[in-house]
Amino acid sequence: MEFHPPLQCIITYLVLPKTKPELAVELINEVQAAGFKVQLVLADSFYGESSSFIACVRKFEMPFIVAIRSNYGVLIHRGKECATTAGEPLSDP
Image 1 (tube, helix red, strand yellow):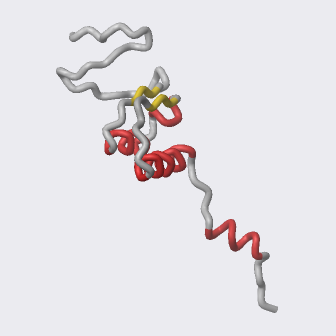
Image 2 (image 1 turned 30 degrees about the vertical axis):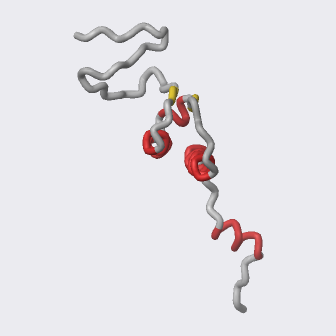
């Protein structure tokens, strides 16, 4: 006897669910394609820690502010501006 999975199982397998950052990247691409001018992108740490999301907003040169968790490591290049959560500039060691 040959096994035939239900159609819903086949469709679910073929259309893989996307992560929130993947959906956000698609939306940003659609917004850009439609010609909208984005003044600022704000996002929580779920997006702030997504390299694909950050790469997308940088690709379109959109100004952005994202949150990151307090234990998330970042590299700040010398001479670049960065602010703490309190909005005060970080001091140079």
